[in-house]
Picture (cartoon, one colour):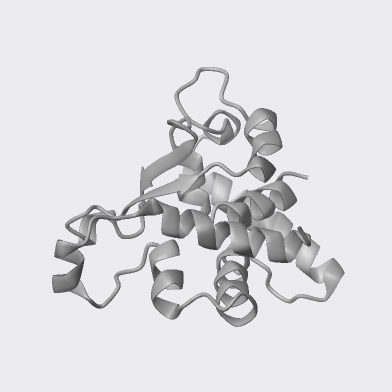
Length: 167
């Protein structure tokens, strides 16, 4: 089921939202790099983020591969707009949620779950959770001095994935 797969993919990709999944380019050196569409026009760094392609994502990259090689996933071929894709995924997730007794389940639950598990179960600092979610840190001046280290996101995402999958 596409909606279930997209939910799992989002979780594995640190809560990537559906519009970013729709547009994200092919992996580059084992990483998905993109500007978060929700906030790209509000930030000097254009909300750029780099997410490591974890082994658990590989079957989904293969299953939903864009045969044209333009994007990581073929969702743009299946759905004419990102809004149609978001609507279909969330409509199906609502049905899944109803079956599981989770009211109004949407894809954002993957992002919220990742953050909650990271903080509460894996003991990841609030600042690191914010970085992983590509939120502004609140340390704007300090951020200008520090080069981004994507390995922080990589390590924390691995902790969360291992916690959930029992590795």
